[in-house]
Amino acid sequence: MAKKTLFTTEFEIHASPKMLYPYFQTASGLSAWFADNVNISPEKIFTFEWDNEQRKAVITSFRLNQFVKFEYLPESEDDNDDRSYFELRFETDELVNSTYIKISDYSDFDDMVELQDVWESLIANLKKVVGG
Image (cartoon, rainbow, N blue to C red):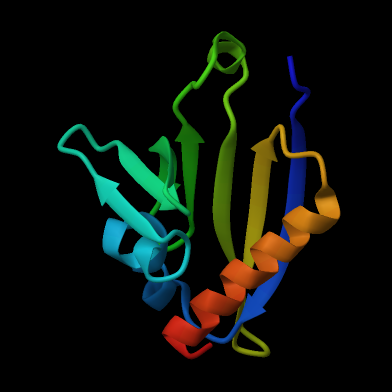
């Protein structure tokens, strides 16, 4: 059984949570920056596709314009008891008119440097899309 770890990081982006939120909880928004393709089933199961590999997830909690948490569907027996997830949370600094995206990524991926690079690349994609 692979041991899972919690990775957290934070990025500043010059866009409001209200403007960013659709990019975090809709299939079309997530397709624009997060994955090569994202579909959502009538049962509200998101299918994320990267390089022809798919992972399925559901939104387990959210608050409009504040955060969204995706939990991956189990791919093995071990996953049933300890599911991988990622959470995207907004914090705003009114003084400097910036939004910070706080990312929590809980998975069995153990190379934290590479995971930081992955999220930096994803957030760079997001900034290109939203101009932030």
